[in-house]
Image (cartoon, rainbow, N blue to C red; front, side):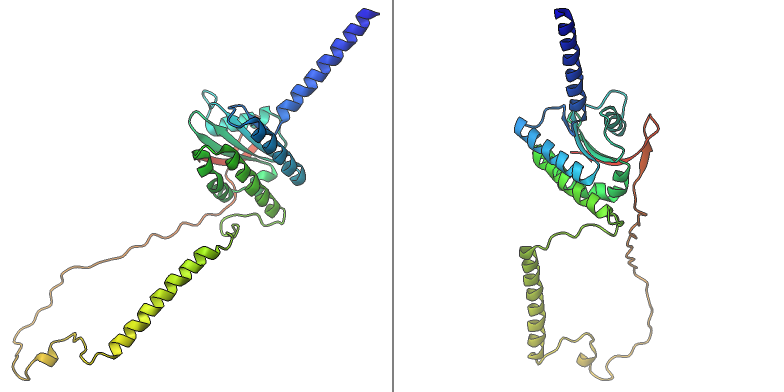
Length: 260
């Protein structure tokens, strides 16, 4: 009887251990490179879970020490996403510390919500913090703007080229701009007033200083000296949307990345 109880207890313990391991694998924050403090880890994980559950898709952050040998950053990020078993719809920020690589991987509705233009925009909000070693700040910025982009995409008009978030109005900056515009207008007005008070005008020709009949032109020629051409490069227009790639399992993903 005792043997049966021991065996049943062992089976139960193994089941619970496997259950915890599976849950650990699914954590939306995988700080394998250990660049966050324990407190930062707990707070960020809570934020990721909250946003993910509200949006109905996985918002994930993964840090690793280095890219798997033989793989590109894109391939390694994709393999990790599938290995950790995240959902069909998702967005993952992948960080590799060795070569200081970052990559935003998108899946399912994430491809629609975070376009190539969106990746550029969102990365501008967190890459500088990554470079400064403010990893918690960078990750929270990633979550914040990813959340905003997904919310916008659900309206049927995702943020993309020509339709990006409006930057917040800066009172100080606009006051400074208004001051300089006013200064320029004042300078122009005073210049006009000054010129109206001057009795002697600048002459562009010598006719007023020439004695009548004193100059006879017997021969004249036109000489071409030089020419100047201003060329302005036309801005290339993007068709928008997301560029995609296929994983080794045949699934389609979007994404883009760079260095920090």
